[in-house]
Each structure stands twice: as C-alpha cells, then as structure tokens.
Image 1 (cartoon, rainbow, N blue to C red):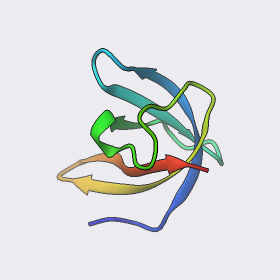
Image 2 (cartoon, rainbow, N blue to C red):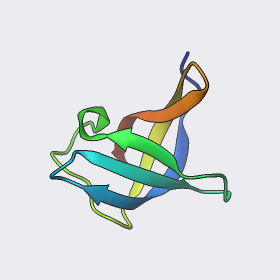
Image 3 (cartoon, helix red, strand yellow):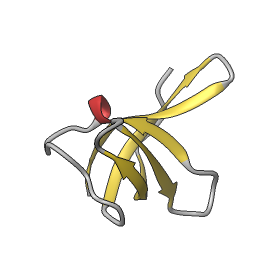
Image 4 (cartoon, rainbow, N blue to C red):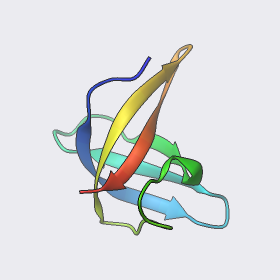
Amino acid sequence: MRSILRAGKVFSFDPAQGLGLIAPCGGDEHVPFRAQAVRFVDVVAEGQLVIYAIERVDAAVRAVEVRPA
C-alpha cells in the first residue's frame, strides 16, 4: 500500500549498487530506495530535494516514485 507524497533530501546514494537513503523533512528515520524507483531523471545526488511515496511491504518500508522536488 502506498502513502501520500512526502518530501526529503537524498542522504546517500550508491549508483554502483543502485541503493540509497532519503532523510525525510520532519526528522523521521531514513527511508531506503532503489535506483529503479527514481522517476524523471537518470540519477539523484546526495543533498538533492526529492518527493516520494512510501510503500510498506510486510514490516519494512521503502520509498517509491522518487522524483526531483
């Protein structure tokens, strides 16, 4: 199930592994994302503002539909 769109900054992103973390605005825990979740650009950079949705799978969460803000 996906949630409403949220805002945050890319905390880290490793293009070789295709994995990253988003630091949500508001100070919640970092949210993981995969490179395949990035939309409208080929790659994101650390510190870049993004908008994303949360997808819950079992007990875990991840960012989906990650796009530049």
